[in-house]
Length: 258
Image (cartoon, rainbow, N blue to C red; front, side, top):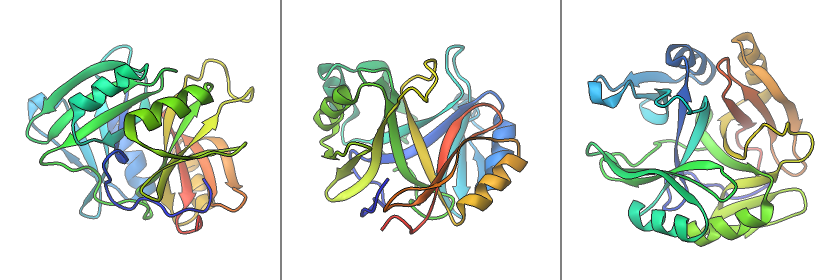
């Protein structure tokens, strides 16, 4: 995550939403509500399955859901906005990825699908109708960056630009993804410092006013520190945390990346 012009609104083929699937939704609502100032708004319809939007002020910022399937891990999932979910799903399969669920309609809100890249990193597609996605980006308490952690750099470099049309700014240490001159994410190649059981995955980063204070507050609320507060050369101050149920997420200091 270097100095860059960053996405601040929902952009087609860019990240638009993040959802936490967790074994204890009530604990997660309390934890993230305290950490980021989010307010829980639960869809009370039985068919919604306990789906809860977390709002920052009046703007939807993220969602928290129960675990819907026995094999579903406790984890954050990144969603990308697309013009046509069915067409994008076909491109995913044509580029060597897998379609895990859908495309399917979600009430009148939109159409979604769950997919995995060739290495197995899971993400979702969102074709908006009534619900466009997050109403705030890159402000304290909101999503500001998404990062692919993978062991197959070359596969990812071929797959994602083919599916989504992303620009690529590679370097030896870090690759950044962008659209129309705005970078929204990056790719980190997992080395030997990552346990072999950690699968490829997408990691959301939330903007905060003070990384050190956020880490301290998070650990006081029961989180573990996976990467302590660190200054990225020519970039922001970041940290990676794991909540009490096991979901990893990153934080970074808003306004320091350029």
